[in-house]
Image (tube, helix red, strand yellow):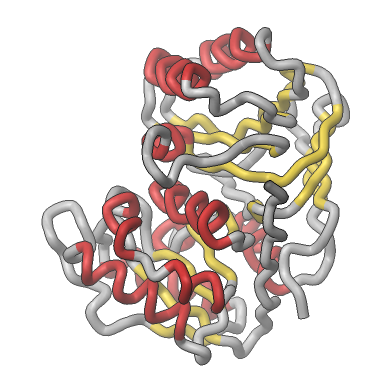
Length: 304
């Protein structure tokens, strides 16, 4: 079956309105407010749902409460883009409650990372929407200028993204092209075996994580390998593995995986839970050059 073409969202510009949703964990109000100011400083207007600060144990309100605003803000024509308030945990719980028809017919910029990887992946597989792996509001509170500039460039610029990794490390030599996908390893692993399982065939897979010991990284990759997730993959690019033990241990695990897949693998991308979190469009074709340490997108991630 021929894959349906990905839908590229409309470009946003200063003066447009960004809506905030909280599909996962609760958050500190002061940190949230500082993150909002970072977005306002870019020239965007902000819409914050009045009930976004609800808390239900480790969740930002009930499942029905959290999903309501995701569905509503996609359907609301006055909202030009959506950024998630925080990761944490909870995105998986709302998957059966999402209005996929509404999301698919109202494409717009959608940004998040960490637990939000769940939604980025499912918006791709279920709705064929291009999304953005990038900072959430709470992480923008203390984000580097590099992180903030990358977010703005991806959402408001019409140029093709080109990333050259100054600290890149070739794990397996080669060049490959394909649609960029992925995000947080733990979240992607948890989708395996569900009706929302990710599809990596003919794609460049980006992976990052935080707070997972090397043996857990190994276990998740082995689990995904046994499930056939890496069959037909085009390439792999690794972001930050923050607080995951020795980076050499992580590299060794990936090297062992690479023995089974003849694809280029590059480490050292400043994306994920590290000091910088470059925004990555997901669902756009790019070329990965593991020898030149580059990821070059073939088109802009927004239109207009």
